[in-house]
Image (cartoon, rainbow over all chains, first blue to last red; front, side):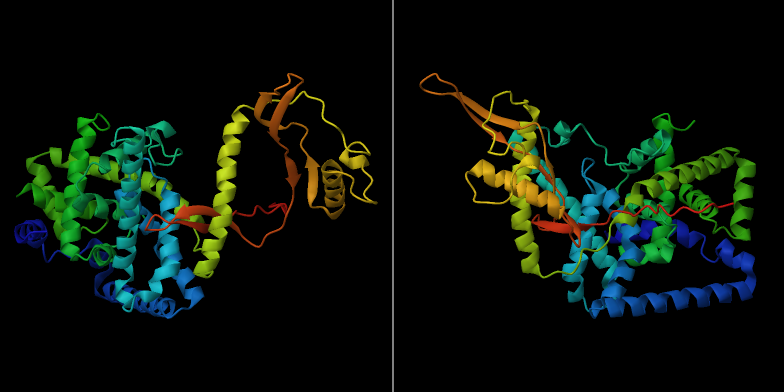
Amino acid sequence: MTQTEHRVDYEPAEALRGSAPAREASCGPDGEGVIARFEQAARRSEDREARAALAGDEESLQALWKRHRRWVAAILLAHKPRWADLDDLLQEVALAVVRKMHELRDPGAVRPWLRTVAINAAHAAGRSGAKRSRDIGLSEEDPHAERNTRSGISPGVPEAGRRLMELAMELPDGYREPLLLKAVHNLSYREIGSILGLPETTIETRIARGRRQLRELAIEHGISE
Amino acid sequence: MSEGELDILITRVVDGRASHEDWRRLEALAGQDAGVWRDLAQAQRDDQILRRAVGMAVGVAASVELPAPVAHEAHRARFQVGERTRRVAMWGGWAAAALVTLAFVSKQPPGGTPQQANTGGPILSAADALSKYIAQGQREGRVINEMPDKVLVNTQPLADGQGYDVVYFRLIMERDRVPDLYRFSSDELGQPVPVRVVIPQISTNVTNPL
């Protein structure tokens, strides 16, 4: 990201700086303190779990995986080719966790590492699909067309949701990822920031812009009025 | 007010983070342009739909467990066996498309069908050995039965015109017990690797909820 893009990203959030989130405002000073203490305790617990997992404790590794796998799936969703199976890619990430996570030294690096592994797995699927399509003479845009065009979105998802997700996939990378992370599990801006390695204000701005672009796309495609 | 500022206000409301001051500003903006309420409603609606859709899409994550931490060589050995099985399965799938119930008369082993085979005594032929295998396997619970249909792979008339050379699969249904189930996926380098499959157990011990 360029310096200019960073500045522009900050601008709207900076303009509103000082207006505390509603949950804090509504809770008052005491409630704010309780939430802050709760979040600190959760961070300490997660940190302990990550340290134990990196030290080779199998139970902690299992717990760590269960804690993170849903948002990892969202990252895969944001980057995978349309035809690739989400569960296959998620299993690849799970395998990398077992085989390589112990090489990490910093528990704070777990989230960015998981994201990198997920993105690599998604891109590797894209490359293998493109190569295969060249080998058998198919369009690279739809390398597995012979597999009856699977969208990669669960068949049980309602039509409006499926179409909106497809539109979300058209958003720029920088907006698509935080938007999907926010949509899954309701991650906080701080958590999304720790995954993407960005400040909370940038996350807020990107989600806000992503939502606006999605709204405009939805209207353009007749999903919304 | 910039468009970006309005987007931030809307997204704070959608995420339940809007402060009293945010609401005050939003109401002031809506007083000048009623389209603000429409944008907010639309953003709320899109967010609800997207959350539900993404939640369903990533629901698969709940069933993806970490594979057992088996040694790398064990992974490789299992893969090699699995890969051979997969290739046979692929070829078998092709052959199954040309499934033909073979109507030729094959020589039954002495003793008739496997169920009737005499399992004692010397092995007289390959067919006899197979019958004894099936009978013994059924007693041990390992073999369920041989499927009545065979899968035709190839036929070729004999040079002397006295019949056909027939190549086919016999299908023997067997049962085994294994500690874990694996499927084959590929790692981040594209190398095939086994991944444990967890099949959810459905309890049959149903009690009356009333």
